[in-house]
Amino acid sequence: MSQTVTRSRKKSDGGDKRAALDRIALAAIGLEAEFAVVMNGEQVRPEAVFGSPRNIIRGPLMHRTGRSYHLPTGGAVYFDTGVIEVATPVIEIERGCAARAGRSLWESILFLRDELDEWEKVHGSDVKLTGFSAHYNISFDLPAHERDSSRSVEKLALLLSYVLPMPVMLLAANRESTGIGVRPRGNRIEVTADFTPSASLMIATATLIVGIVRSVMRWESFELEMLEKKRLPVLENFRPMRHTSRKGWLARFSCFAENPFQCDIDETMWPTRDGRTLALREIAGLTARHFWPSIRRISDPFSLRLIGSVLRGRAPSLLDLHERPECYEDIGRLCRWDNLFPERVLPRSRYERVLIRAITGEELHMNGFWYKPTGMKGWSRVVFRRRGDGTRHVFSLDYLLDHLSAWERHKSRKAGSWRAQTESKFGVRR
Image (cartoon, rainbow, N blue to C red; front, side, top):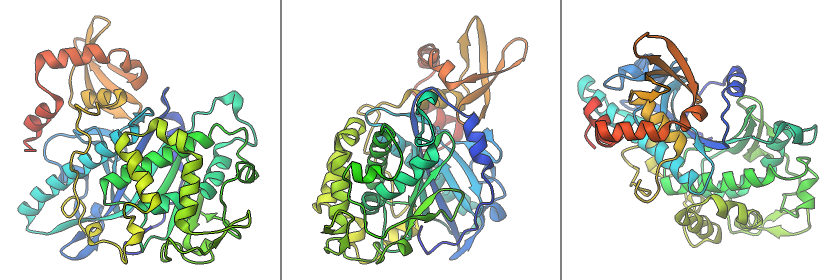
């Protein structure tokens, strides 16, 4: 992660156990972004200053779990050991899924930034969100009968820690970055990197990661010997270290003969196990080329071109710059979302649409009853109160997918778009 932000180490894997229970039927991805909070020039702990996200966000918030709350965008916000974290809903894996996830994340970031702008006016303080880290989550949905001692999520994470670092560096890292991590999280793989202030580069990174992870997940074994069998370029004398946060693996700068984040990415200086000496950009390009069919299957056309352009040197990588750009220090103001993928071009995913219906409190008519959404249990279940008898009911996202069309028909008859209702409910101008 970047060296400019301090943060305490997480202590437990309780979230991994909860995640194992929070399963969905469709393979999915999700993005998370963490931000340090700088108030009047000093880094502060958001929980100490704000207490709760409820004290930043105007209007009611739907509770998710613990101290996290859903935003009207479909994402969630919470404070996590000294940072503010914003997360997307689960989004099923299909063509354009990384663009949908990136759009959702940046909409939530800008919603939070707008609310902080109003908080500043009331309290007379300057609050900046400083980019810290980004997490790319991909379902580990290998069928149970195909899992064995050589095809576990833990072995997959270790294998990916040899495959992913170089191409992810080119797309997501900057000169002050310190590592690319891969963590097994029960029912998913989590790739950790620096926050990327360019929405297009972040989406390109997510696209590449999903394509590679989904391809490697289909290999007959997750043993390290597969790297040689698949003829992938692997650096000599490289071995990832244990991750500094939770279990997993980290390709930290100290794991390399030279710091790859500080070197000339086009200098031929990296000996590989097959006897070649290559440049960092070459290694990243060869790796991406090996997985190109899988990357192409889930990519939107714009992100596919951007990945190819960066890896060929036709578009700039942040590692081409001499220093970390200033825009990292004020996310949401110095860098913003430019609506690269409007809904008319890339409709929202089905899981996303279900969550947005629930978060905005729209009643659902099914099986002869009306149900009012009142909360969430993790990412995969919605809590309802049934009209008439007031009983509490919990339905999974997968169950609600079968009722999405009826839910949306009722919505279209009752009001305009979800965005119009959100603006009216929260008093926020877009």
